[in-house]
Image 1 (tube, helix red, strand yellow):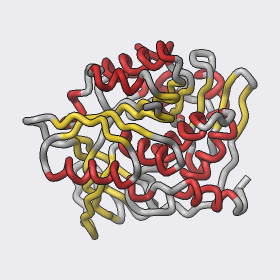
Image 2 (cartoon, rainbow, N blue to C red; image 1 turned 30 degrees about the horizontal axis):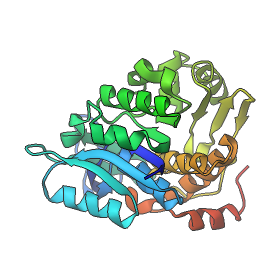
Image 3 (cartoon, rainbow, N blue to C red; image 1 turned 90 degrees about the horizontal axis):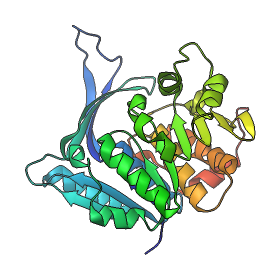
Length: 303
């Protein structure tokens, strides 16, 4: 089977509480609701790629608990092929999320079974070798991601890395990355340019990888490659929940590249997908379909 997109990464049960303002150290905050749903950067990105029309496989790990069943059902209902190890003696990964009134999140992650992805199994290697685009993040152990990137490079796939949440962990395998996606803080961590703006950061990253995107959500994003540095379009949106905004962008970007779109065109649609996701509640549940995004793109841009 040939796949458009393979995502190697994390899957979490998201436990979300709504707060007016996240607590600061030594203080407490009163929550309004407690919700649980599927999430994790890897799972979110796989769902996004699939909903954007790509034949998608997710390579990951879960425990053998009730949370695992919820995540596997989400993948199945989203049309994602699951190449997932069910690990005895490990809990499924989880994330404790405080969502404030501005739509911003504070996250505590419990890796659980995600921590076993420090190697590339034979089954996973076979999947990676038969995919057009490999999408990675850094919520799982670096050795496994590095092995997946090297296997994809040998097979001629395009490797997209979302260098989050710990950008410096990407250093060992940047040579196998074709498209690097960061936010401004992660870009500064990789470049050492703490005071630089998005354009300078993207240009600096593009000296190390063929193409780099500094994703700024509703504030605007910047793309840099051999054709230069340019801003991506912005779309009008009201931020409700930022939980899966970055992941939606990355999954939509990978789907566009797998369709054969030029990088800037794929990134432009991915920006629209992210702008639509931020207006919806939840993590995986907030991710739009290709039809949703194409309709949304017909509406006005912010600039």
